[in-house]
Amino acid sequence: MMNLSRPSHSIILILFFMLAINSTSALTKYNVLNFGAKPNGKTDSTKAFLMAWKAACTSADSTIIYVPKGRYLLGSMAFQGGCKSPQIIFRIDGTLVAPQDYRVLGKSTDWLSFEGVNGVSILGGALDAKGPSLWACKASHSNCPSGATTLSFTNSKNIRIRSLLSLNSQMFHIVINGCENVNVQGVRIIAAGNSPNTDGIHVQLSKNVNIIKCSIKTGDDCISIGPGTKNLWVEQVTCGPGHGISIGSLAKDLKEEGVQNITVKKTIFLGTQNGLRIKSWARPSTGFVQGIRFMDSLMINVQNPIVIDQNYCPHNLNCPNQVSGIKIKDIIYEGIRGMSSTQVAIKFDCSLKNPCTGIRLQNINLSYLNKPAQSSCSNVRGKTLNLVRPESCL
Image (cartoon, one colour):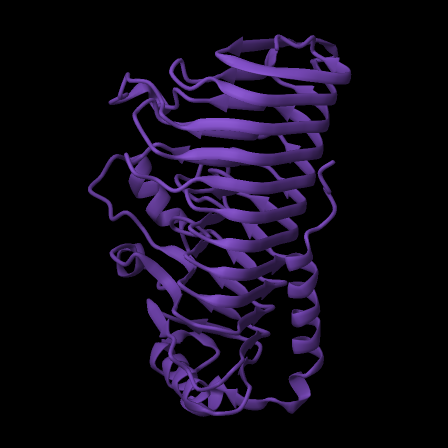
């Protein structure tokens, strides 16, 4: 029988982080004000922050970079790894703000990026990326830059992000790419419900990632789970507005790593476009999705509470019109309850070539405006246990 309790890697990771927090008094401290940063929100403090990072990075001690209260104007910055310091903590009591002109950040991929680092923590503070002006540009169909991700970690290990506010990102708020042992806890993400491509937390090519006790309000997926994600634990996350928690979209490339061992539990969805979603384009791929546990979720006025869509094509533009090669199997939905805002509360639209297998519905109770909802199944095999409403089509 499968053990659905928190895996041992998560417990070890949490203990490591607790020890790190309790040892902050022994750290060598660097105050960004001493490097010339100005807390007035008008003077460019980019150089000062990079100098503080260099000092901490080259120290042989565990270090803390302290950002006092105030507003700090910052351009695009890359914090590079290869550090001597075994642990660097950004302790932020202030707000980091992007330039008012969206074009300054918009031409960059990232606003604040950490690359090849080990043992970095971000504790507290707020990141204000001033995204609305870029969103307005995109809404007017003008010639606009793509926009920057607010905070990214790439090819990094032993990362923690705690009690951070990400406000109005131009594009994705937080990206975890090619990382190992990451703990995200108590994070708040806020953007308008119509803000484009503002995924809350995106994880890909990463393993042993925990996302705990977060509130995400945004214009795209609250959490998006990309190829190569393994051992992801999501718990006590509130999502809405947004597009839900999504695995995918997959099948973007022919050769693609799989997604496996994902647990999503104790989540709340408020007025979202989707609840628990798996999505792939209808084209060939070597990718797969397996070992997924969706447990104990509350849906409040959600358009698609449970959905697998292997014919994903937003706005029906340039659809590949092929057959998805993504193999989806061993997916459990348990304790999913609440109200759908559309009549079809459960939709499994799977691949004709690779039908979804091992789908299990258990203790599901979804209604449609306090009336019976419906299920829709295509190319799917599975079973139901205990009460399942709407009536299963498996």
